Image 1: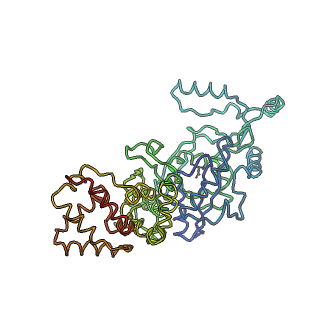
Image 2: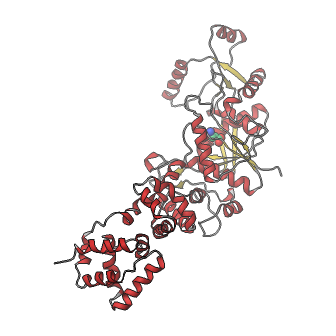
Image 3: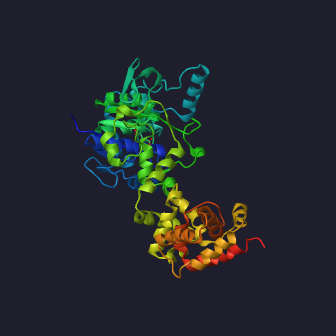
Length: 483
Ligand code: GLU
C-alpha cells in the first residue's frame, strides 16, 4: 500500500476558523493514524484577499492546537514552494501543454458578454455555464484578438456527455454530469491559476493520496476530476467532511459567536479541549468516552466513523470538555496558564503581591468555577474587594446568634494564618469548641467575609487573606448586624 499523504491547504484570506481547524485536525489524525505525512500549503491565488499575516496566524493557530506537519509552509520539503503564487511557472507549463494538445483554449469574452450569457440562461431556466463561444475560434481570430491587446483567460474544454463519479470515502459515490459544468477557467487573464486547476497540480506533484476537506468543495470535485483527466494524472481518494451548523441548524457564522481559533484561545479554552471538541464535530469514536487525548484519537481515528450528516456546534459541550481539561491540570500548570489572563485584569498587581504559595491557593480555590481561563477575572474580586453584601447575605447576618459566631471567630483567630489546612482546621475547631451547628458557623461567616451566600470554599479565601484581613472583614460585617 502506498504511504498515506494528506494535506491541509488553507486560503490565507482570514484567520483559521473552526471549520478549517477541523479539516486540519482530521487530516492530521489520518496521517498519524496510518503512519503517513501531512503537508500544509497556502492557496493564495486570490491576491486581493490573501495576506501573509493571515498565513502566519493560521500557522500559529495550528501550532497552538498541537497539529504538526511533515512538509510545507515553515518546515519546507522536496515539493515546494508551498504557496501557489510562487508556483506560477509550474501551472503555466501545464496550461501551455493543455492548449497545445487542444484540451484548453484562450477565451476573450468580456465581463459584459459573460453577464449577458448568464442572464439569458437564467431567463431560459437553464444552468448557468459557459457555452463555449471561444472554443472554436480559428487561429487567425485568436491572433487578431491578441493583437488588439486582449489578455485571454484559459478554459478547459470539458468533454460533453460525460459522467464524473466522485468516489467519496464519507459520502459514497456522488455523480455529476459534465454538461452542467461548461468549459471553466483554469487560468485567469492575469496569469494566475484558478483554484480548481492549481489544487489538482499541487495535489499531484506533492503525491497526495487522500484529500480530506470540507463538504463545500464536493461540487468542485468533478471539475478537478476533469483536470486530472486532461492532464493524465490519477486522482487521489476524496473524503468530504460535513458542514458545521450552529444550534439553530444554520451554517456556522459570526452570528453564532466566536468562529476563529484565536478567539477561543483568547477566551481561555485549552488547546487540548478545543482539539477534543473539534474531533467530535463529525467523527464518533467507538465507545462512550468523549474525553480523549490526542493519542487516543490518533489510535482510533477512521473515516468510516465520520458522519455524512452535518455536525452541530454545541458551545455547552465545548464548555463541558474545557472544564474537564481544566480539572485535570495540576495546580502549577494552571497557575502558569492563568497568568496571562490575570495580567489583563485590574487585580494583576495584587495577585502578584500574594507570592507563589498564596497564588497557588487562590488557583486551587477557583479551579472548579472556571469554564474557561478568562473566567478567572470574574473570580478575583471576591479575594480583593470589600464585600458588597447582597440582601440574602444581610438576611443571614441578621439572624439571631450571628453576633456570637462572629465574636467567637474573632477571639480565636490565630495571629498568623497562612495554610489552607490551618483555615479548615480552624473552622472545625470553632464549631467543636463553641458547640454551634456547622450551618450556623459556615453561612454567617461566608456572608460576613464575602457579602455573599454562596461561592468559593471559605478556607481558601481565609488562607489567602490571612488572619488580619479576616479580622478586618469581621469588623465590616458587624456594621450589618441589627442594633
Ligand atoms: N483553499 C481551500 C479552502 O481554504 C481548500 C481547498 C481544498 O482543500 O482543496 O477552503
